[in-house]
Length: 130
Image (cartoon, rainbow, N blue to C red; front, top):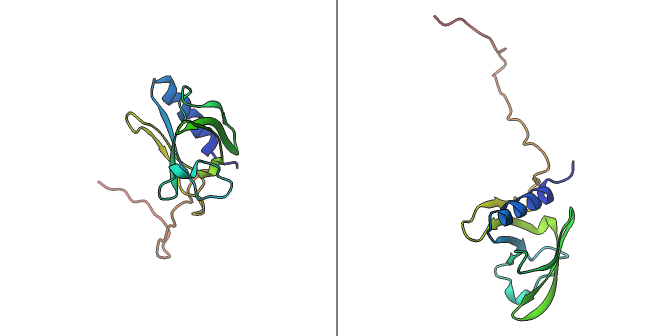
């Protein structure tokens, strides 16, 4: 199955904007193919305000997120893979979602594996309790 991350990002973005709040994306700027203004990167991460009044030509695709914005008064074309998105949240109240970092085997694309059941070699059984 494909990753659920881009679908969740689009849904949460719309929900945040519909409620009159400011959507922010937390992006791992150290990943390959991430093009963000390096002077605004801190600890390998950057927070991007993606409110419709703050960006132009916002594109939330399945593989890439891109938009044009001004940073310190200079225009900049931001583009990065969806997998670099670590969180989307509303600036005003922090509501949103944090995504697992890439590389830990969980991209949100499937259910967790079931827990192992060790019964010690006994068959499960039922008994009447009075």
